Length: 564
Ligand code: SF4
Image 1 (cartoon, rainbow, N blue to C red):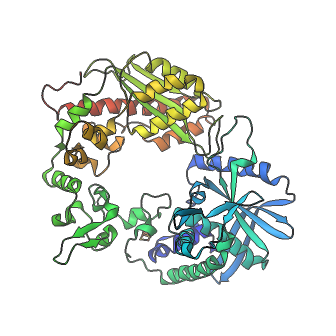
Image 2: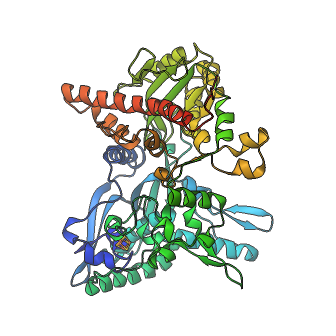
């Protein structure tokens, strides 16, 4: 069986994984969605063109393997290899930015020291700590980098495992593996990339201790394979990684006894655990510890363990099939709206490589909007003349047209611009201000009028404190239904008021939308038209859902309540 770092990382999650997995049918977690694959290829080719072409000769996609055990062949493929002064350099490309590594600091007295520093050859490496007083915090940071259960540590693990496989298979010791990330501050000039797009990080100082970890982990994997133990094992948050980018592929199976809705995990902030009162002081319980003891439903948690007002609200709503509505708060915040109500929603593509001028790596590049304008209370035709939409041509930079048309539509009115989860739209609008300074004030007029509908159903503590609500009231959420199951996402909230709003749509979420947009160019004309239509219908439903939520809320408010 061929074992890469990724396969090893999966097999050592728990003893059960080996019995569930079919080694013939490995799943590549790293680049599983369509758009990342396309972007990864561009990242790969650009790095070679900009960074390596001076360092000839270099090779690419070289593989090495080593028979560690009769059934285990350690195996790795190296993105790029070159030789500098007799030393073999392997480059491992990681589709992420260096930001989190470069912001790592440790305190010494009142100063904070950077863990990574730039070297003369424009790479970043770990700086040794010379100060005894800072050692403890410094070592904590190093431990974080060597811990495979967090994202930073996992990239270090994958990088240095390549060096390990290369060393044991070739017996060459004069080798180093460098991790190639993207520079999050790089701004594309719109014409050509330059080498500052990349940040090269050197984790090799950690290799001696990681080498021992790899050996121990391979033994652990062999042990799991030999056990072939199918019986359930305790669920462990940092190993199962449910709803995380490194989620185990068997969570659907291992978590199948946990209710899909209103489970213990759906309590707000359930990751903080629960406190059991006792005469000697509260006893803290981790949520996964409780799950492993059989507490899987919200109702399984003893009510005396719920200290948080919001947990009690959730619990009461479930037990009594009740919809909690803080009428006064909702009416107060809705009253700040100004007609006509302008509903706005963007769709955006998170690009590994910036596509257009002034974009940075992983920019959420806006390609679509939907706008509904509601002139009268309780009246909006989803498909009528007050709906506006824009879908970019994926082959060209259409942002100027998008900005111009959006400004033309929105700024002819003075009304509130309603979005759901304001941070996203606000950030995109600010980025567009940076791209088109000539539209700065028009875009600012939109930003200044943004109204977050999530604040109506969830909360905006600052707003309510400013409007003379008590601290207690200002802290509470405004609306809760058992249908929410602990989530205030637009797709959850709309279910309270329109349970099948997205059911008949071919595109039902933002990830499916940007994947469809990425594929547009490659489709035959008829399929392209159908997909474009699917995208338009999806985005239109997002803005219409916001209208439906406000309309649905009226039935819970005072009989004569009016926004106007
Ligand atoms: S979901 Fe958790 S318990 Fe199940 S195989 Fe994966 S890591 Fe193990």
